[in-house]
Amino acid sequence: MRDVRIFFRHPQLLFFIVAGVSLFAGLVNFHSSIAVKDYIETEGEICNVESKQVLWHQHYVTRYDYDIVWYDNSEKHTRHLEEQVDPEEEGVRTIWVRPDNKNAILSNSVDFGQDVPLYLLVGLVSGAIGFFICKVRSNKRRETRAQRIERLEDTKMYSIMVIILTVIAMGMFGIMGYEDYKNGYIPSGVWDTYFALIVIIVVAFVMYRRAKKQLR
Image (cartoon, rainbow, N blue to C red; front, top):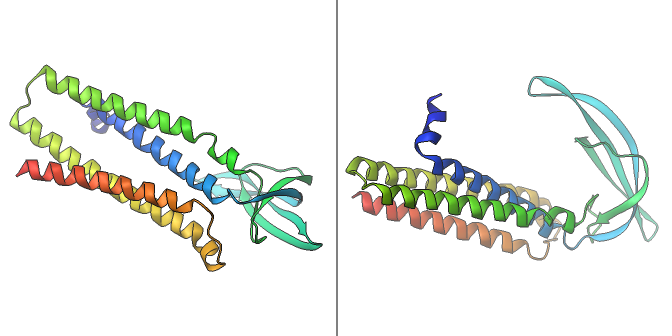
């Protein structure tokens, strides 16, 4: 209950959280879109669809295993997927295949990237509202020393959280791309994602240093 009351005292925190989650989701989708940008559209087949019950958060849910099969120069390639959320019907369908035939997916880069503008818009608007609330509240009344210290300490804390989450995101993307790197395949434009993440870390670090300096 105490954790909920903090949002009534500091409503800007809720907007900052929404902004952070939205921007992170947009970044993940953007990375996925870039990672499959070079994939080639072709005809494949869904085979061996099986449903099973798996334990998830103390409840059993239905998940699906199936194979994606495709041919390149008469050579057969297969990708086996396990515990997928959405069921797939067996049969021929359009798929997208990595140029070296090491991977195949059922959606293209446009599908992955279509929600990115919405996530970015929600993130930017929420962040702007959060900063606007901070500005209005600070203009309404003069900050006491205790309130100023609390605001700067919050800035330090949230800056560190952003840095940690961004580093985790970089680690996740690194793990996702490790197999591609081992096979000598690096999707075009993937470095744009890492550049964006580094910019976020730099901005958060500057905010942290500024708040720390003002606390002295």
